[in-house]
Structures are given as C-alpha cells and as structure tokens.
Image 1 (cartoon, rainbow, N blue to C red):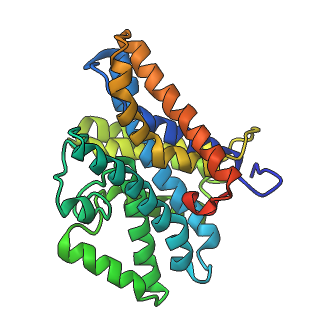
Image 2 (image 1 turned 60 degrees about the vertical axis):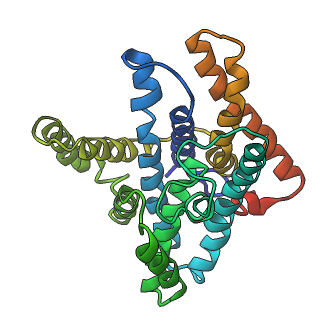
Length: 300
C-alpha cells in the first residue's frame, strides 16, 4: 500500500482533499440550473461527503481496538465541531442586533443552541459540520459495544429530542468502508468488487427509483479503485479538516461583498471557491503558528 514516511496513505489523502473541495462547491451562491456548470457545482459535489464517509470507516479499522476511543473522538470531532458552530453563531447574533439577518432557516431563539450549535434536530448553523456531528454519533454507537456508556447519553438526547442521525447514509458508508478494509477489497479482491459492483450500478440506474443507491455505489466503486493506486501526494489531514469546518461561513460572509462587483457568473462562482480555500489556508496558518491544534482535532 502506498504510504508516506509517516505511514499516511497517499490515495486516502488525495480523496480526502478532493472530497472536501467538492463539498466547498456545494455552498457557493450561483444561478446555474442546468448544463455542465450545474453538474459541477450541484451534482458532482454530492459525492464529497459520501467518499469521506467511506474513508472514515476504512481508517477506523486500523485503530478499532484503540483504548479510550470516545475520549479521543471528543477531542478530534466534538470539540472542533462545537468551536466551528460557536464561531458562526456569535458573529451572526451580533450582526442580527445591528440589523443584518444571515440566517435563512433558523430562528433567533433557543433553536440557535439546540439546532444551530448542537444539531439536535437540524443541520447546524455551519452546514458542512453535520458530517462531523453524525460521525461523532457513529462513534458513540461504537462506544456502546466497548461498554462506554457515555455514548448512550449522547444517543439518548438525540433520540428523545431530535434525530440520532441527520444523514443515515454516513453510518452505512462508514460500515462499508470498514468492511472494504477488513476484506482487503482495495488489494487482491478489487476486480471481484468491480465485477459485482458495476452490474449493480447499471441495474440501480435502470431499475431502481432511489437515486441515492446509485450514488452510493458510485462512491464505493470510486473509493475501491482509487485507494490502492500508487502515486506521490502530500499530507492534507489538518488543512482538509480546517477547510471542511470553515469554508461555508467564509463564503456566506464574503458573498454579499463579491456580489457588489457584478462579476460574470462563472467568475463569481470561481472566486467564491478560491477565496474560501485561500482564507481557510490563512486560518490554518494562524492555528498552526499559535499551536491551537484543538481547533482541528489535534491533527497538526
């Protein structure tokens, strides 16, 4: 398996940054409703979260017997998740008091805490972080099998007051990624996975009305065929996490200013993506310089 000197899988790193950049496309403002631009900005990005879900399960297999799993996930998932949403809620409330309303789906009441920050029954105020929220819940479920009852508290709160999983497909694809690693589908059995998966993909397109199944199969086949490739790349983990957590608020706050420039639609879309990546790079540099590793789950 291709790895860096520190044991990092190059292909995983490539898929991780590609997936997060695709997710970035999802949150830009544009008026495209058809054609290639719409496919690139709306259809293709849907695979970003799917592939990240598979990657999470695949990587978990390697540390499945780790001690204090939930404690580690509190630091690497829950803490960055809460910070990323608090850092959006505070300026949003301040701007609201000044007469600017940046929220389109949440009211300025207790919902800002229960849903906006905690995501109990709705996508959080920082939308892409729903993936982190659901992934943490998945690890809470796993913790129960390790007899760590703290996971039960989290699950019970979400079950009673909202939704245990906002997007159940994250758990399904996490499990699929785990099984891919367990059965070494990325190595000796890749061709068998394609022999089975490609006909299923074709059948799902023609005979199933649920297009979600079609997308899941595409994501799995893409992962299986990329994960074993041998090529050089870079370690992207911490920066990818920063981009995932903060690209949406950067875009939301900058878009009104960009729109004043009256740019062509393609330029406006491209500039939103470029600025999100650039400013998140600056934020990442600051976090690294100040040694604020907890902001990105101690991945520095």
